[in-house]
Amino acid sequence: PATGEATAAAVPPERPITYSLSVRGDFAFNTGLGDDPGDVTVSRAGINFAVGIPQGMRGQWGLAVDFERSNYDFTGATTLSPSNPDLNFDANITTLSLSYGRQETEQWGWLAGGSIGVAADDGAHLGDSLVGTVFGGVSYAFSQDFRVAVGAIVATQSEDNIPVLPLLSLDWQIKKRTKVSNDRKPGLVFNYALDDSWTVRVGGQYEFRDFRLDRDGPIPNGVARDRRAPFFVGIRYAPTKQIDIDVSAGAYFFQTLRVDDSGGNRLKEVDADATPFLRIGLAYKF
Image 1 (cartoon, one colour):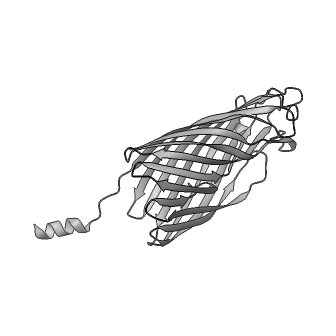
Image 2: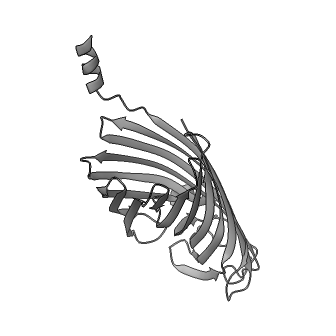
Image 3: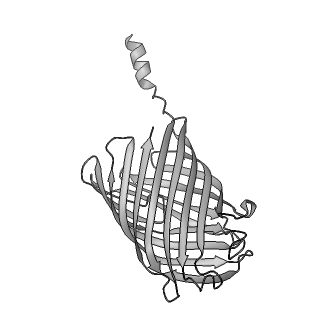
């Protein structure tokens, strides 16, 4: 019996398959279009389902499906659309992604994967709305509290050149309650844990979205491009290990809204004024 117990203790337990389901909502208040006439209000909601499948003790597959719907409600935007200044875009972005990561040593690890999806306004040709990415990178842990990852992503964009974008991920546990990371997005987020359940978050990030426009709309089969930088303060509440609630408020800066024709040639571009926003997210892990 003593030998059997020692043998069992020496065999690491199998890691379970993990699942997560999250929903999110975002509302940006009405704002003017800089020096151009008109204004815009933007709201969006999304849902994500992800699965983590361990392979051995060092590797893991990741599979995720994400859907997001955004509404852009313009009023008097004669620069973007002189014939129909009160235009409305409804962007539906669906993405299926697959990745594989492996921790080779205590310090070194790597990740590679790709995604395919559709980014389309209501009424757009789905065949013209396909988008995809391929990405990869390596990570290095300088210590148990400080890890950095670098890599690149190759992304297709509707009627645009295929860009190669650098990726940088930072995860730094400065002190027991203080952490700096970028949540796997361009930007930086400061986290301070008040206790085991409550965390205050302050940060800034960069967002971009491209989607095909309605084939029968004011810009037939064109492309809309949205660029913006949210700066926010929020609080995260995790009453259990399975539940995560995130509420934040802030402002969007450096907002640029552009429309191209069906061939990708720029038609018009406007800069929206800074505007406050509210955001909420709910995640459940099982």
